[in-house]
Length: 531
Image (cartoon, rainbow, N blue to C red; front, top):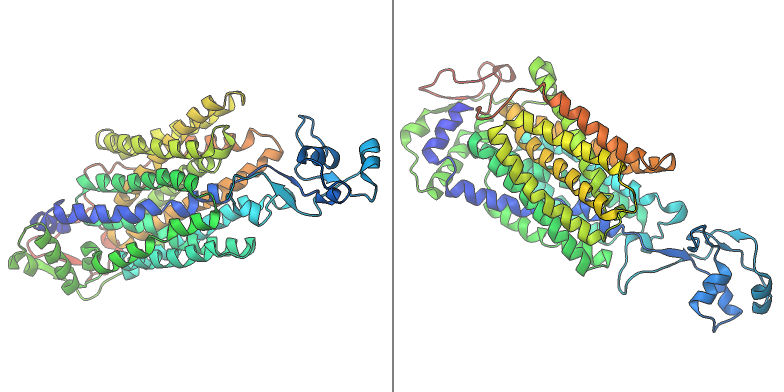
């Protein structure tokens, strides 16, 4: 949008105001991954077996090992069954030791969990084991379903009511429902609250990135988005340390959500609205106030000539998703980018939710995943400036997909090798996600930008819903999940090559998305729009 670019040149394209804004936006960016990825620790699995304290009535002084030998069946590998026990009998201890018990039953009296002192998870507290073990995957998918719904809702809120209000509302709801999660009385309430956490948390990164991009020039847009994604990585690294230090899931949830109260207060007082959005809505006075604030922070003076040249009509028009599908070239872009976001999310969460299955300490693995995203974001930033958005997006998707296929060829007795390849796959997924935020925002006109990026992100959340459920296909063959995680990104990478390049291209505005008398212009420029 070259007219607004002219205004940015006068007030400062990327000076103190924009730098402080990006730094401020990075703060909630650190918390954005907590709600989703913390599920790895909040739902952590611990060794468990049936509660067989019934036999202590026959022999109260027996050791734990003796109790288990008499009451628990043994698997082929020599370990005790976790979901079966020998049927309780009314025999005396001597008879049980001499004859043994042949019949088995389910865990009728609950379970014993082998947890570190003070540690707990929703699995141990709500007994999500054996016939209830799938509730972990279900809760993850429901959280992603909430994100799916939230992206649809908050995309509209952002385009209709502004980027600032969307951010503040999402932070408020994240605080309220995050606290409710920590107080959940049962797994059903937990799942409901996690759904609404997903609804509110979905808007944070999208609204943050759109606001940052609309306050700067295209050359700096990728830098802003990368910094936001880097703050997300820092959050993941911090999450590993916090979860290791606080292994009680309720306290952990409170610690992860509590600081957002302060963030919400600071943002309410200081976060600005997007001047670009205000202009597109015909709100001239508000736009001028925000522009003057930015110019003052940058040590610039907004001349009366520039302010007078900003002519805004009184018939603002808000775009919607139907506008995108009405125009052929936008329809093509949104469909391909939706597949791209789906594949990036599918790959990312497919690996992230499986960190406990690679054979290495879960806290260390999650920390390494977070560390790997740092170079992923910065390398992707460098490559998209030299190779362009399209080639970089396609390349990282294919790289991540191939990594998943390589994991299938590595024997399970080599957990370190599997973890290294998984980290490389996560590297590709993180880089692809980072590029997608930049690329998508540059592909859509201003009045439908949040709706377009929101629709793409909605498809990513569909992938988030399906990704945990794909692990259930292990019952047919243990290679199926990783095979699916690998093939989809490779296909999506090929489709990316059909998109246009947006490197060093102005943010666009499409005249068909505006009413004839709608919009803004600078008096000295009569037609400066790009299709």
